[in-house]
Amino acid sequence: MAVRLDDMDRKILAELQEDAGQSLDEIARKVGSSKTPVWNRIRKLREAGVIGRQTFILDPEALGLDACFFVLIRTSEHEAEWQQKFLATLRARPEVLEAHRLAGEIDYILKVRVPNARAYDTFYQALISEVRIFNVTALLSMEEIKSTTLLPV
Image (cartoon, rainbow, N blue to C red; front, top):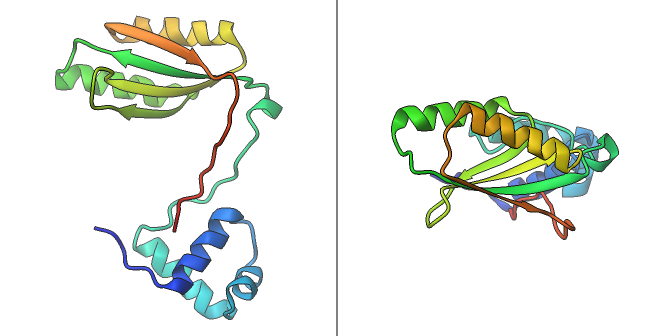
């Protein structure tokens, strides 16, 4: 169930999404409030589950992770045991930034960040050695056109 947000909540959330490292004073000034009410709203939004963990966004290329692959997976396995092993395998792989179960012909899509194609092949070989997969298609992203963590609040 969605949490009801008022305009002030939305302004605070927009500021936090833009830069969670801002001080409460900065956020309060930008949203037209004072520090204590902003802190109270942030606390309530955390308790309601609207705000999760705080993190920093790193530049993958600055860290040598130049290659982004989207991996399309089709499987003929749909038993709970296979799925649990597959999900555990994905969660254990730091290269997998995102994993989604899909409707349609493709069962899963992964977003994988690695230094290069050779590193992707190492990832791929490890993945197929740990869990049986019917078909894997890897698509190399040539250019990232848009990437954001900002939700439309």
